[in-house]
Image (tube, rainbow, N blue to C red; front, side):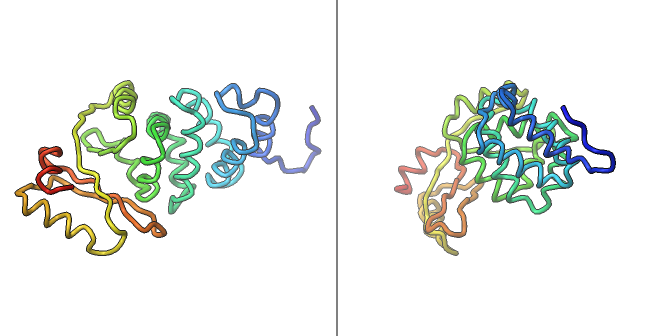
Length: 220
């Protein structure tokens, strides 16, 4: 291995990525050795700040990725989420310094793209993982698997049905749904929506005491 000439700056992020691109470098972390994976890692490293900060973040990230249920999905979704952070360097530094929080976030991001899009729209939601008494509501495509993963991480998990309603992505579109539920005598515990600006429709998740009865009574 050739050492850099005296006086030349060494880019620790470039050195780390070069080592990962070598034979079996990414295999140690249950990742495929391809350009897409390296690109995702490079973008994360660059968003973490200067090359030293980037290398430090990847150094903390990779062993935890290997422990995630689906390392490739966790990496892909983490990179997508990080692109929506208002201050990525600050947030990634906080994750680097809190390995448990980073590990829990990677486990959640392994569960599917729906949750990733929700976190991307509200980047600060990840901080709820730090709150011992916080409540984080998740809609996932595999509830049994999601609940099992969270319980393995020692989170208290409760499961309940909810109404998921698709409405036009425009102001006031949920009012008609609210009138239907009110007319049927259904109380709302909570409601939240998710949609990108370029989407024609939005998905609204509505918490009610009895989702099946509410759906039948309101015709949803």
